[in-house]
Image: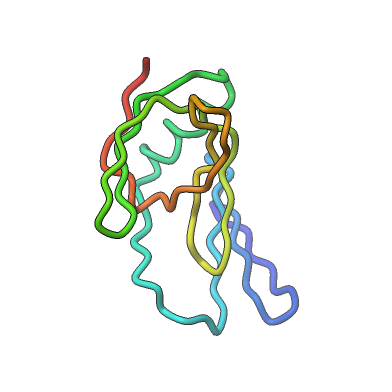
Length: 105
């Protein structure tokens, strides 16, 4: 089940169950590839439990392989991000379609 609302020229669709929002607007195509709902749910569960996870992701030509603490999920310009805290205490956002693997620690 989905609930859609137009607000300021942007259509916001809320899908029942996962709390996931899809946004459609006049935006630049960034090549973002939505992830599966099952993977999105795993990020939500890790956030709710405050669990550390082993995450492998790529930004540009750099591949990261670290233990992190997922903090939140957000959407900006039609792209979805995982907000996380590194072991060093630094926080950062990782685009969900750049994540290769996530394993519980």
